[in-house]
Length: 177
Image (cartoon, rainbow, N blue to C red):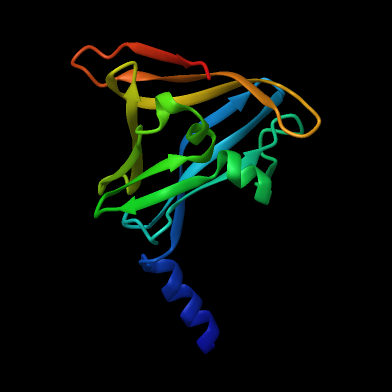
């Protein structure tokens, strides 16, 4: 066996720290079409956060196909991008650009944490924020907007999740500018 084959075989057999996994967190849906902004958390194969800016967003182009994706443009980053990321040992808190335009959401932070299951070798993310005054697992955000030539006019935003109380219930908060 040549040296390259041996090296490749060793690499396949060992779990190499630092290999990145992208964990889906939540989506922003909007009234314009079925495309979604997907948020993800980057971790290594030990479910550890791998950078100072581990959360990012991209388009899931559902109008094309469920697997089709595209990066956000610079302008879209201003609306949908992740800002003010603060990384801790097992999580990160952050804000969203789309939410910065609404006073009711100014002080609201989103926190993503990750846990690992050594038996199944899987990483499980959890995303929490405050919805209607309750700590809740964030599932999605829906933006209703009137499309215009230059900039859409947002009519309202629905923040949707499940309360993390002893009896979890669906919670939705509608924010109107």
